[in-house]
Image (cartoon, rainbow, N blue to C red; front, side, top):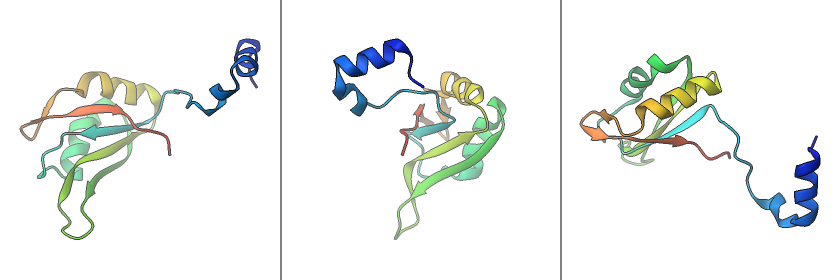
Length: 105
C-alpha cells in the first residue's frame, strides 16, 4: 500500500514508477577479489557478521577461474548492513575488496 506522499509523487511524476526503489537487502556484491579467493575464504571472512545463507564466487565458464567478484547472502538485513559497513575496503587475500548491496534481479 502506498503512502499518501508516495501516491502524490507517482501522480505528479509517473516516470518515478520506473525508478528502482532502494530497499535494504540481504545480498552483498563483493568486488576486487583475488583470483585465488574461493567460496570458503569468502565465507570465513564474512561469517563474523551474521548467519550466511549463500556464498558464490563467480567463475569463468570455460576456464573455471575466478572472475574477481562474488556474492554473500545473509539471513538478515542487519547482518548484511553490518558486513557492508565493516568489510568495505578491507584486505582479503592481499586485495582491497569493495562491498555493496547487490542489485535486485
